[in-house]
Image 1: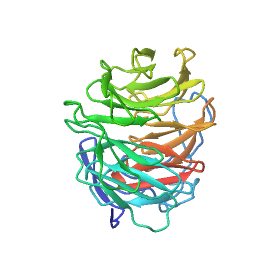
Image 2: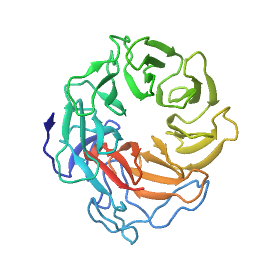
Image 3: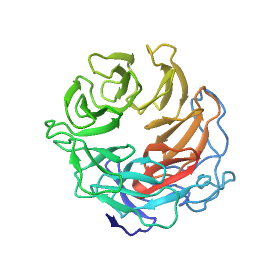
Image 4: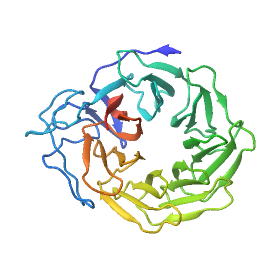
Length: 360
């Protein structure tokens, strides 16, 4: 386990293949890489076609300014959980009672830091990986996928150490996202597959094929749920992976998914829609809002749905039944994935080389 030093706020980062010099939250009026300066006003529509937000007049990454004129960034109560070296590009983030864990895609690392910032430098738990992608925490292990020609899932103890391949090989199928129940491990791979193993790495098999660019996955006691970015479907199937049912089709590149007792929620990247439907059959679709291109990961608690948008650089929330949209943070550098605990929402601002949090 290693400790890494921090770096400056200004980074040279790649966004959609184009190079840009940007600042993190609280930077200039242009916002961070992938972000945008907030505009005045508050969104209150339950099915808003556009979203606007309050804005301040600058400030740093812990600014609590939420109103004013002249541009700037809104990030109420934001805290920097960790800064990582330039070129690391943190991506997926998960939290437990004590720590925030994340993947560094470009530098090939798994890291963690105390989720309540205390000045402790981030710890390096695993290195020399290919392109670590999705992450999942259990009570005693860290699981992840790698975007690698043979990207088998791996796991290690929560405190780091030697890691173990869940299976020996899955062929030329780079890994995307992973979820772990008390019995099984499910993960999505490119180009079109959902895989399953027993929790001990036994009985691994290709559960479902024909799911073009399968992405985020969720599960409950009886089913797994996932989205396909490539063929624009929201799908569910039994835990034994014997079949599947389309809950929604012809979506705009669905990216994130979340479930509760009654509903499935998902985001659509290209059209920015945040929607929900009955999770039994996909009926009663409700369009909660349209956030603009880039709506990515979604996550829920008892009352709200939260999402990240790497294109406009924002973290937002709204009630699960519809209602006012709250801007939690803007001017973030390409936030894609989000995590929650009882009090905070966490995200990796990839192009800012930071892991952040703000009050829910």
